[in-house]
Structure formats: structure tokens, C-alpha cells
Amino acid sequence: MNGYERLLRPARNAAAVVLAVSLGGCAALLGGGSKAVPTFDLSAPSGFTASRAGRGQLVVGGPTALAVFDTERIVVEPAPGQVAYLSDAQWSDRLPALFQARLLESFENGNRARSVARAGAGVTADYSLMTDIRTFGLQTYQGTEAVVEVSAKVVDDRSGRILAAEVFRARAPASGTSGAEATRALDEASDQVFIAIVKWASARF
Image (cartoon, rainbow, N blue to C red; front, side, top):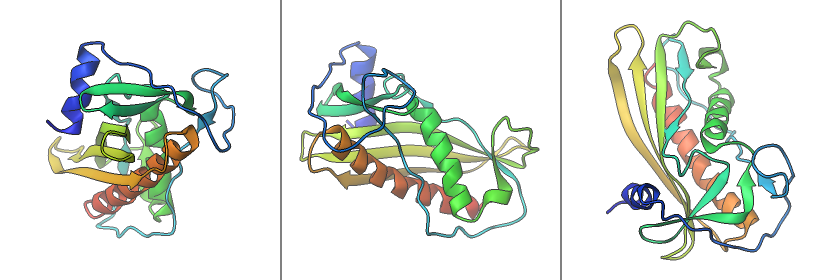
């Protein structure tokens, strides 16, 4: 059973539990979720360049995700088949919205700012990038590591055909389950996925 299936089963059975962890490091109390819970953000990677295939215009849609990920809460998998959340840390926005914002920034940082826009921004698109967040959390039952898995599709808006599809995965070790360490590892893993998606998609439009 893969990580996606392990998360899906307990979400359907409403068997999610809350994992209480200590919080270390610095965090800003920003909007989203509970104002009393320290809030963390994702970064967008920089210092890389994505090659350009042509002169097309790409729009980046909002990612889809299971309800367990469509939240400000930070997912932890303490055992196979069990979904939990950090009790003392949260994202600065719901994860799909945060992921979309940082993915757009990653395209811009990869020198693709003039050819990529957010879906709904009034841009006439040649292509659309559709993503689905399959896994985005901390696994603690075989060591402690951040795991990010995202599927992506590039769609030709003129024909409606899927031109390319790929699943992107990344892992990053975490030295603990504090909010600061968990989000640091997730940020590292998501940066790997952002760069891979940007380079992959840029070679197709």
C-alpha cells in the first residue's frame, strides 16, 4: 500500500488523530487557522533556470487534494494507515493555495515570469498546468522525514488534450517533530518538487 492509499483510508474512516508535539524555533503569528498557533510558510526555490520550449502561455491552476491536506494543519503519519496533525504548528494558508502561490513564484524565479500566470488572472492561455497533492507531510514510523508527492499534467487548452503527465516525489530528513523542524524538512522536500515541476513543464510549452 503506498503513502497515498495509507492517507486515504483513515480519512474516509474519520479515524484521524492529533499528534501533540513540542514547538521549537521561530514562527510568525500570521493569518490562516488559529491565531494562537504559530504559523509557518513555504519558500519558493531560486538560483535555477528553466529552459523554454516555445512561446506559449501557461496558466497554473489551483491544486486538488484530499480533505486531509486541504487545510492549514500540518499532516503527520505516525504509523502506516494513520493520519495525525501537529498540534502546535500550522501553515500560513490552506496547503493547496500556499502550494499554488509558491509554484508560481518558482516559475518566476526560474526566469519564466513573462510566460506563466495564475488561472483566473484574465490571461489567454495556450496551456494549463494541473496538479494534485497526493502526499505532503511528515512520516515518523521509519525514521523521521518529510514526504511530498504531487502529480502534474500539462493540458493543451486549444484541443483539451493532456500533453504530458508525471508524478514528482521528494523526501527530506527531519531531526525532530517540532513545528520548526517539520516545516523546514517539508520546505526542503517541496523545493525539490517545485524545481522539478518547473523544469519539466517549461520544456513542454
